[in-house]
Length: 397
Image 1 (cartoon, one colour):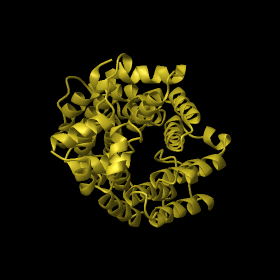
Image 2 (tube, rainbow, N blue to C red; image 1 turned 90 degrees about the vertical axis):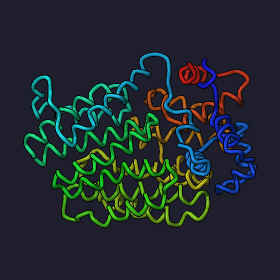
Image 3 (cartoon, rainbow, N blue to C red; image 1 turned 30 degrees about the vertical axis):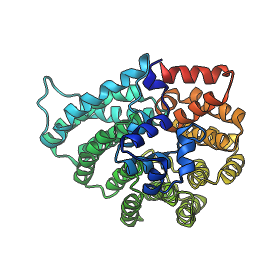
């Protein structure tokens, strides 16, 4: 195990704080968190939540990835996913000018099938398989887009770039995610489909959340929602997804305070789902009753109301959860493992994180909150249960 891999967010936070010449009290004055909260994160007594990390990073003038220790390098096959980053940087310029290929590009129907495959892989959290496909698909679609100027090709290219934003963000390459957002937005506009730019806004909101920019994220989401046309087959899917994303952003912005705005956004989405407004899936956004239900628990988690999150989790039921794709289900299990850790039920926290690892191991490997929870559980246990030991070993070797 490398020393860097064994470091916690708290260790990195203390180092970054001292490098700035700040005491814990000084950092508390620059952020919305108390000195005691900062001290407990630094000593590993509290889980470093995404809201805390983004706020602390903004106060210290560092990227959140520095506090998380991203990008995470791991031993074995999973580490190969990082090879996609230099390739994405190489092909990104071709979105503007079109590439000169060494050979003929694949047919458009083949590339469209590749884009659809990557969407399916994304909801299954198969990150390495996505990375193996993505740069070539972007390069070849850029060729066809400039050659034909066909809006349908620009739409495919925009979707591929959106997948690039999602992949780089999950791996901790925030700068690359930001770099991919601009061409993704331009290509969405050239697709001449008014509902494609809001998809980019959904991705942009996640990137802004990590940078502690909640109000700009909500402003962009509100603008996107206002532009949704009511007479299209994907209206319910996109509008509902925006409402759910807005609920999470608003809850994060509240920082444990008044959650009225977050619950208002969530209420709109829940009512839309109740009325059957989900519609047939067009973009794979998973605006379903099950996804709405787990977002309710997530809003409570972000607001710091762990009791309410646990109550909502109990009401969801295993049958509903079973209908979720692995990525969504694993995200909920990570949230619930965090809840159980916060309320001191470490046994259930271990079971939830172990289940998430069974259904989406790559997601767990590269997810900062999962790592924070695992680190906390390892520190709290004298003897590690085998599933926890295995997950921790994979994260730290």
